[in-house]
Image 1: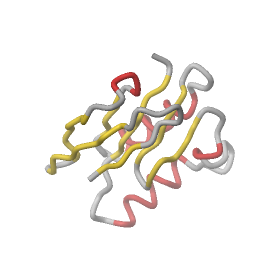
Image 2: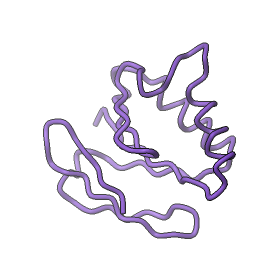
Image 3: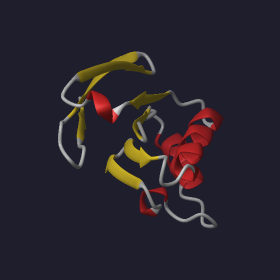
Image 4: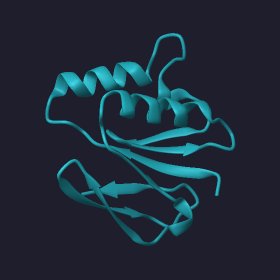
Length: 107
């Protein structure tokens, strides 16, 4: 396995989310979604190829920890299956489509 689907809790407070996004899109490192090996799939979901580039994964984990946001990792090798995980107090389900370029829908 060399990629991970990373889902980060979106808080109700928009200022907290903006602060998190500012941390992962630091000017000295550039926007996370433009980093090599990273694909932003939705507002709070990233596909990270950590064999190609480990720094974006570290940035996501560090910022989520700093802002006390929950984070979930879903393995793309389990594509075609639904994955349940908790985000804050709400239970979410993510479906990772079995495709060459993985896509995720979180509901």
